[in-house]
Length: 103
Image (cartoon, rainbow, N blue to C red; front, side, top):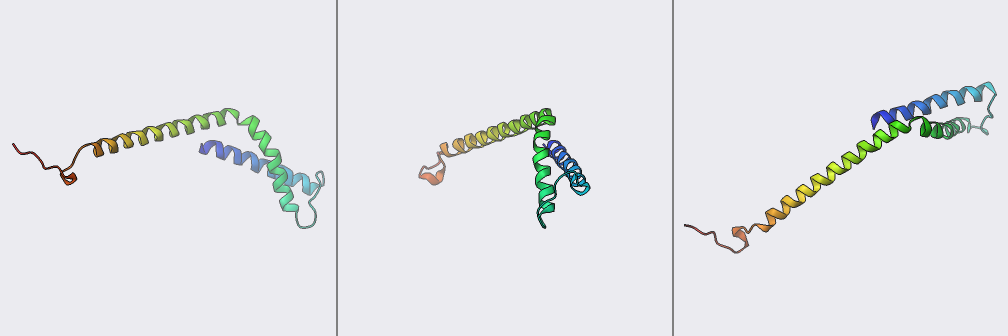
């Protein structure tokens, strides 16, 4: 999961550098007034999203498998804990009004 996130961040940073170079060289339009930085970031986000969608398809599938396995493991742990609690409450204790039997 961390690998996918870092790869996606790398693609965004690469797009940010390219867009910044294009804007400051005059090949891409500048933002209005003081919004030039925001324009560069938004254009980089817009370009990096479809690139990462296509390029990182296999890595995204691996990450989703890991997430599914983690969720299944948590569900199994919760169910095991729930069954342990049920067993503990099914057994009567002396504080519930029953006297212990002595032989």
